[in-house]
Length: 225
Image 1 (spheres, rainbow, N blue to C red):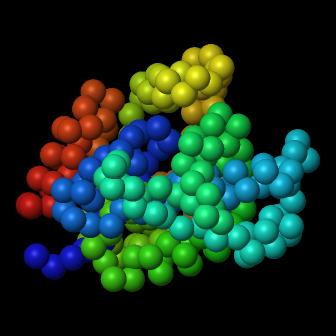
Image 2 (image 1 turned 45 degrees about the vertical axis):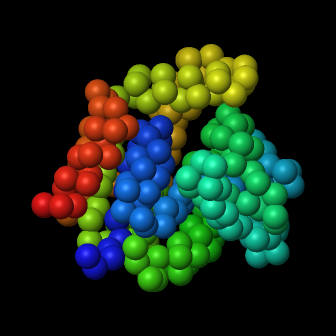
């Protein structure tokens, strides 16, 4: 079968990454988590003290970004790739509530988006990839052969994220997580640069009441059709 690009877009905490990983594994495709890349840049900005209530210090951030190396390293024990920054595994670091609170602000910076979109396009040049994010089917790969747009209710998404953070020992309330979800939705859909929106030819999957397995089966069924 000819290899294609599968673009998976959608709102935060809809399980895009988990589903995309499983689809990639089932097809023997490369999985690329673009959301992790934006989180990685956010982690870098926080580590270097380049974000504050005044906003993002974009020039020093871009300088730091150009002198840093982001790459995905396959973890055979987990069955998917993890994000590394300058040789350090930062997969756990980028899932913190601090990163979640700042990632939408970082992601709306035009310079950051241009830098990462170019990287993402290079990663998908040979096809055979499942890439998830906010603008994969609209900006990064508008020519992708299969586009999926994932959504779910705010409350269900917040509950999923809350359980995930609790499992990691983070001290956070459900109300705080729900507020973060609503804030990220607003910023992601209203930003000037590559706002979150469904591509005209994307297929919507509302996974409010679907398991990961049911989502994967649905996408593989669509692919066969």
